[in-house]
Amino acid sequence: MKILHIIPTYTPARFASGPINATHDLNKWLSQKGVDITVYTTNADKPNDKINVPVNREVNIDGVKVFYFQTSFPRFWYYSSALRKKLKESIQKFDLIHISSVFLSASTLGAYYAKKFKKPYIISFFGTLMKVPMSHGTLKKKIYLNLIEKRNLRGASVIHFTSEKEKKDYELFNLPKNKKKIVIFSGIDPNVFKPNIDPKFFREKFNIPVGDKVILFLGRLSWIKGIDTLIPAFGEVLKKNPQTTLVLAGQDADYNKEIGQLIFESNVGDKVITPGPIFGDEKAAALSQSDIFVLSSYSEAGSLAVIEALLYGIPTVITENCGMSHEIGRAGAGIVVKKNIEDLSEALIRILNDDNLAGEMKKRARVFAENELVFSKIVDKYIKLYEEVINDHKENNKYRT
Image 1: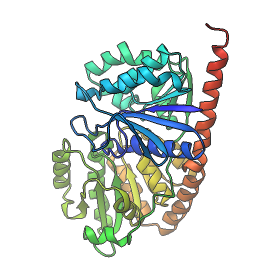
Image 2 (image 1 turned 90 degrees about the vertical axis):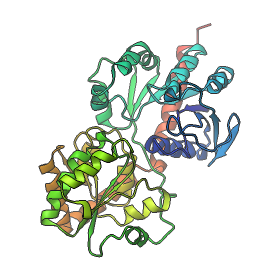
Image 3 (image 1 turned 120 degrees about the vertical axis):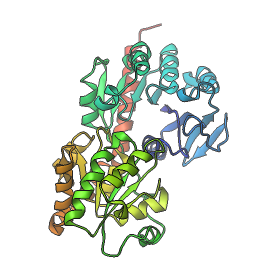
Image 4 (image 1 turned 45 degrees about the horizontal axis):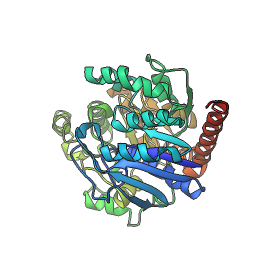
């Protein structure tokens, strides 16, 4: 079984770290299971930033064959003429194409050549087609959706979602519904997600007061993450739990001014830490030292940061707009709230002040993550899906010339 995975950016790129990490961990586990997996991607991180990688040749990363191609103009579309040429020359040798993108050249090129050479393909889009992102889309984006992306979706053998919430949001819109739709959670590789440093390093580096409990937000600091609710809610938390620190770990230069204003207006500046984006051992140390993980997003598909927090046994407070909110609430691994200051602050205070509740949530979070969210359990679902799609495609095309 030969699989081609097409994605606009790939490790070691970090701007879209959630989809990148989830995709690479999946590919790594597929390779370990004996699947012949190849990745076509670009050397971009952000549209105007490049990663230092060899281009136009195979690079082996954790057993995965990766080809990086130089981006061309226009960079905002992550277009690569070299990738297009490689697809045209080589796509026939693969049994199935998995595309992790919409609104970028990866989905359009992948879908075009898959259809041209009669190869089945799957599309994953990590929340891009959910209700809130769609309602905030530009006119240009809506035109692109109707002229190009709907055709790409319509031609897919399977549309893949990372949560039931993402699937339900997709079904609200006038998007192709005649294809098979499947939900498989994003996952994590627990073998590599362990700190190789003293976990206390994180508290010491950022001077978190001894005795303070830590509320951790981890992700890109953009408007869609609901920071406008989180910071005022934290102000309410401090009134009853002054020995608490909020860590906002992430980066988004376009939103930093608004975050600073929210911190000032809520009068929480001395209790909020903004370390910027954290990775590797530093991120693992932060998770190991946190008491609550919070995700207050307007919209979210299947957050990798949430999965990481659950694996570390951190009680989670998550808005109902987020993918996996239903599953987390059902598992008793956290509290699901409406996206408003009162509900969010009350949930945070409840966990901070109830050690028995926090302890029970920690146990349930780990059980849920270890049973549902690690790739040792998830990878077989993908292999089964790939096999079904390939076999169905062969059967449907058996008598065609």
